[in-house]
Image 1 (spheres, rainbow, N blue to C red):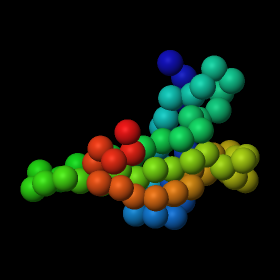
Image 2 (image 1 turned 180 degrees about the vertical axis):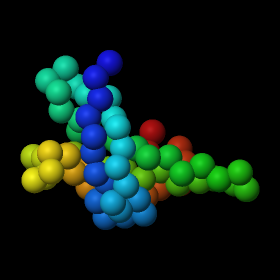
Image 3 (image 1 turned 135 degrees about the vertical axis):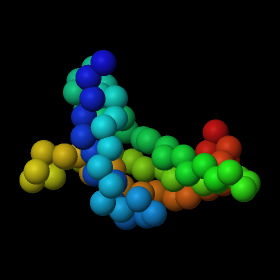
Amino acid sequence: MDTVTVRLTDGPADGRLLELPADPDGLPPARWVLVDERPSGPGAEHLYTRGSRPDDDGRWPMRWVRTDLVGMTE
């Protein structure tokens, strides 16, 4: 499976780079949920959406939309 490098922008993971699975057309997924699990209780799910085009460095931005408790975005 091919992967594509994305940069998370805004939100709690701002600036973090991730390798995500590429769609058949080579693009990152349109939406991605980053799960922040905590051993002491419910964690958070951070919803990110793909930007319209890659940045100058060739990495796709994934922009933060919102954060919910684990399970709320299902």
